[in-house]
Image (cartoon, rainbow, N blue to C red; front, side):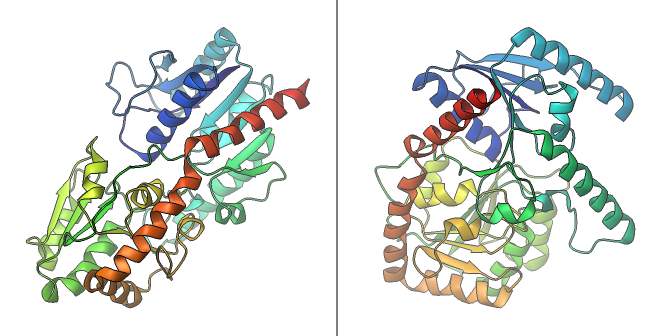
Length: 368
């Protein structure tokens, strides 16, 4: 089968890039697919994750003001797709333009939309002004219209279903990139979090929680891995909170498995998620996890009080207490970590990828 992915850039160290590398490699190596990927303005930037050398990459150079940008995007997309002639297209673009790919291509090809983020990804702060609300509602309206033109609209969790009102909805979780044979011993006094320094990832919330724990647990360390923003807002916040002696910030690393294995607790304080790939990666290494019950994802992965703690969103006191409980109770960490590792097996590629294969084949069959 000839499958075309349409996305933005896949050279970064984010969750979408990681997932796409896992899926495309499986499609090629196990299912014998022919894979093409259209990217935007990626040029010759090295890829962070390993993608199969059998993938055919097509890069569109799209720059200029919004009108010129859109014209170049539409023209370039039509030309490339006509050249590739895919049997099916999957759109991995959480921005607004991705919603209109079927219309741009005049619905000539079976097309699937993969939603990798919550609707809340467009929120830039907790308190929205009147103009921000109007802008956000306008974006939502366009998304609600555009999503109806896909043959299937795929979300990652059952929680994501509540965000959309389409008849073409499907739920397929992200596949896990690995199942670590070893598991974290959970004896190191180290807490880990992975994610870029965007507003949605909520590292500022984590730092405020850590400041409430820091004084009485100075033998514990917090490590945060992820692309650091240019303004270094979280680094400056850590300085303001006086916790720099127990908090360390690192840019993305390829050996993140080693970092999971050396930690004892995984923490997530995101304001929104599409899935929470880092949670199942932490599970695969036997780490108990704590997360706010944000939209969307954590509630589909964490079983509260079994393999981790799911905290009502914005309940800082509860989050702080549960984190302290895991820090002082090694027996609880070991019990939750064992259950977490066992649960991670349900996300292995051989469990998830056949769902995609079946979906694609059914869509093509029904379009004939």
